[in-house]
Image (cartoon, rainbow, N blue to C red; front, top):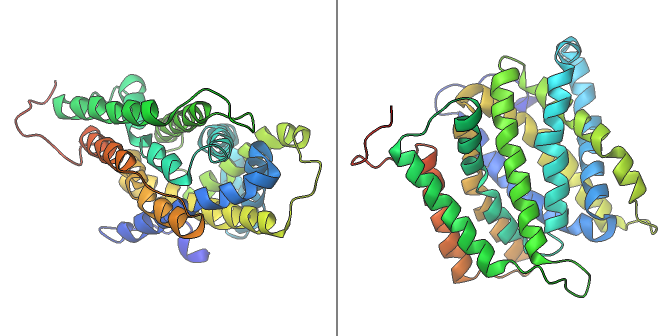
Length: 307
C-alpha cells in the first residue's frame, strides 16, 4: 500500500500507475454487481467509501498529513460527493439492470464530459479537432443508449434506460470533479485528496444507506465483494488517481477510462458469463475515437486550431 501513496512519479513510469488503475477499476464493476444484489445500490456505495475511509485515515495520520486535510477539508469533502458518493451509487444501481461491460463502456465517456466542463468552467476552449471529437463521442453514446435503453420496467421494477442515465450522471459528476480538483485542490497531496474525498462521500451517503439498509443481512460473498471494492478499487485506486492528476493533469488522467472497459468486459465474460455484442463494440470504438480526439490524444492535421 505504501508504494502507491504520494511519492511523485516522473516521465514514463506514470504509465504503470495508469494501467494498474485501469485494471483495478475494471474489476470494480464486477464487485459492485456482486455486492449490490444483496446490499442494494446506496448501501453498497456507502459501505464501499466507508471501508476506503477506514483504510486511508490511519495512513494519512501516520504520514503526518492530517493537518493538510484540516486546512483543505471543505473542498476535499465536497469533491468526495462528486467523485465518489454520487458516481458509486449510480453505477451500483446501473449494474443491477445492465451488464458490467455496458456500464464500463459508458464510463469511457468521462473524458468527454471532462472536456466539456473544462471548456465551460475553466475556459479550456477546444480546437476544431477536439470539438469534432466531442461530437463523435456523444454520437457514439447516443447510438449505444438508443439500442440498449428501455424505460419499460422489467420484472424487478428496474429499467435499462434509467441505468444508462445513471451511468451518464456518474460520468458528468466525474468530469465536474476533475475540473474542481484542478481549480481548488492543485498542490494538495494525493493521499489527502483521496482520504478526504472518501470521508466526504461516507458522510454524504450514511443516512440514505441506513434508511435503505437491507432487512436481511448480506452473505459472505457480498461482504467480500464490498470489501474488495472498498480497499482495492477505492482506497488504493483513488491514491493512484489523484497522484496521476498531480503528475500528468486531469485530461490525461481521465483517459484511463479508455482502458477500463477492456478489463471490465474480460472480467464480466469470465466471472459473470456476460456477452459483448458487435453493436456494443462498434459504439465503444466510436466513443473511444471521439474521446481521443476531444482530449487531444489524436489530432486531425487538416483542421485549424481555434483561437
